[in-house]
Image (cartoon, rainbow over all chains, first blue to last red):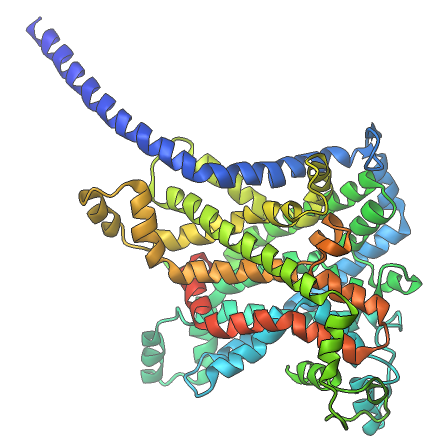
Length: 315
Length: 253
């Protein structure tokens, strides 16, 4: 039975150690939670709870002032049958499918060019980043002016070469592509910066080894550079996709919000703005925002699943 | 790439008549720098500038402080439910800003903040992206530095303030630029959260400018350039740090 008391003694010792540890941990935990509290509470109040509320509101009819009335799936049903909403879905999808690959491919090529030690690199990088730092509203205005059918620079240049001069923004068949062109011009620099950061992480030793093996520049690109920057490419792809699915301000500036010409350019976020803040149909607006959220979530998840096929992480 | 900018600058110095000329002059026939002063005369551009600066500085500095504090705790400290809280914060990244627009409008209306600086600044100082970016960066800073500081009797605040922050300048600058840019250029949020002339920011200012002077492109271009220049200068000065900041944080993994 002698062993029993020693066990107790040990236990006592253990308890003391644990308690001392716990006390230290408690102080650390309290400070840590204090450090996190402002951000967490802010995100809770202005992001998490509103997101949940938005989900709830999408099942109601609400003018923004009186009490919301529960209508179940009516909003979603109405929306799915509404040709205007269908149009906005198609436009948003076309916008994303065309603009994202275009922007990523161009950004990859440009970042390769800019990832060299040549004079004036700061200047060239700034050049590509200029459109990114420019206010989208200002970008919209400049391009609207460039696209102007009578006095715009683009059609003037086309006329010099006796080429057809389309009415870029007012021809329903090409309006969306005209805006896509501006969007790609505006966003390519952002992706260039991210990809440059990725490229600078690729160790030079890989290239030295490849050169000894006599691999051509093209081979080096496909066998070394491209696989090694796939994590960055993946990030660029996801973020570009999410932001192009949320297209709003460019279109707002280039076409305006009260125009029959809007339909060829209407996007989902435009619908959220219009229903919510022009027609005070908060329920319908929330339903649209929520459908967009579901779509973005689904696409992001699919991309994360699909990434295993092409993204290589260092191990 | 740069042609739209050159065209913007060129147009901004033209007279109204010259801007409507076919074929257009690439270089203005006569220079009209007074377009720039006209922008300030015709609308309260100073006010827009001031408002935008207040909002951007307020959002950026507060966000850097709050995000870095939280990121420090996640990267360096032990506490219960750490992963659960972190995942909850990351889940915010998934929520498109448009989804929360309407409930936030309701919250801010309840608080009586619509059309005040509070509405423009406060919701914008909390950022899941910022916490994520800085945490990734902090994790890359050697832990030995903290341990040395602890032995020297540094408090947690001391480690954060005197060890981590000075070593995280590139990441702070990168996040600062992203936040400043997003805040400066933001359009949809101020469009909805403010309505008086007094609370207008630059993005809304030049958009409404367009409504008033829809065909006067020289004035529009001058206004557009004026509202963009501070961010261009900011980028030129900080671009080296920006790339360093990104390449050392999570993006590259």
